[in-house]
Structure formats: C-alpha cells, structure tokens
Image (cartoon, rainbow, N blue to C red; front, side, top):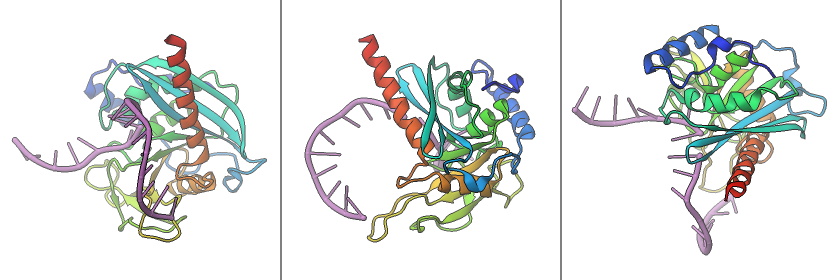
Amino acid sequence: MDVVRPEFLPDASASREAMEALQRDVAAAAVFADEFEFDPARVGRPEGPLVAGVDQAFLDDRAVSAVVVRRGDEVVERAYAVTPLEIPYIPGLLSFREGGPIVDALRGLEHVPDLVLFDGSGRIHYREAGLATHMGVAFDVPAVGVAKNLLCGTPERDVDDLAEGERVPVLADGDVTAADGEVIGYAVQSRQYDSGRQSINPLWVSPGHRVSATTAADVVLATTAGYKLPEPTRLADAYADEAKREVESREE
DNA sequence: GCGACAG
DNA sequence: ATCTTGTCGC
C-alpha cells in the first residue's frame, strides 16, 4: 500500500513543538466518522473486508514492526520491517517513535487493507492524533486504535468487572482538545471470565481515521476470538516476536 | 511544584 | 515495550 499524504509522515528529528503542530494538522485532516466502502457487518467473516493488524517488538535501539493481513480467519499476507529507533518513548508522541518503522512495514504491502488495527490510541489522545490516527491519515486508510492502557479522557462510568461484549464510552475532558463530553472512544470488554473474583481489564478502543467510535468498538469485538486482543493484533504481536527472534539469531 | 502519562 | 520460571487461577 502507498502513503497518500506524505506531508503528514512523522519526522523523528523534528522539535517537540513541530511534532505537536503536525499532530494538530493530522487531527484536522482525520475523519472520526464511518467513511469506507466495506460492509462493517462482514468484518471477520470469510468473504469480508481485508483487516490488518500492526504491532511492534524491540531490539535494543531498533524496532521490529509487523503487519498481518487477514480475510475472515485466513492470513492473506504478512510483512515486517526493522528500523533504528530515533527517539525515546514520550507519552503523546508515540507515532514519532514508532511511526517510521510502521510506515516501512506497511508500504510495499501488496494487499491494500480495508481496515487497519494499531496497537495504541487513535482519537484517545491529547490532540486527537494518536498512532492510529497519524498512520490512518498518512495512508488515508480506515484505522482503529487498540490500547491496553488509557492515555487520557474519562470513562463515563466504572469499568471494573464489565461483562464480555460490554463497552463504556470514554469522554473528552480537559486534557483532550475535543469538546468536553465528546465520546472519543470506548472501554471494550473483549474478554472476561464467566465466574470468579478475577477480572480482565478492558481494551481502550478509539477511532483512528474514517471510522466512528461505535464502529471502532464493533470491529474490535467482531475480530476477537477467545483472547483479549483482536485476532489481527494478536497475530501481528506474535509475528513481531517471531521476526525479532529471527533477527537476533541471524546476528549471533 | 506535583501528578499523569499509549508503547 | 523489555528483563524472565514457575505458579496460581480461569
């Protein structure tokens, strides 16, 4: 797949101010509403849309970015890229650390995904421009952010012990540029123990680009298969680890 | 100044 | 994210 908006590609050598300014431009170009051709009801189904998962593993000063493209439960294509990391992890600026490696893994992908799931936030971000939003806008592809922890925003209610399949809106607050009370994402309980006192934490799902918050939560649940993480993300996670070990053994 | 903070 | 075996609980 190709980069459609190169002017939005993250530049890790930019100043913090320039990075934040670019994020504001990315957020302004982002569409937090359903704007795609495929039938969302067919996500995860045999003849449904191509859904890709992206995740990273790390090797000292390098990132291994892996992508797995699926149609139904079939893996159609896989790809990965190894890139030197240029900056440390800074909350709110994740796309400048991992965006380059991810772009390398995504560009050149033979199949153009109908939807891409990223490990991190989308609109749940101080400037509404998390990793999923940044990448989604650069490639102009429908994108969803799937995070294991909440970066900012406020859950509408308590999210402890939600039942499997349940969701709770995440509202914009003073830390987010969106208007207070705006639904910027959802806590999504993709998996839960049926009984007992142990509880699984929800995923924090938010629209990246060309997807509404509701649809973002829907597709995550539609692609979840017995594990907490949606299948495309889970497979990309495993593939990133596999690629990492491969690179390690190749260099020893 | 203190606290909060995706991966 | 990552360093890491067994272990307790689903």
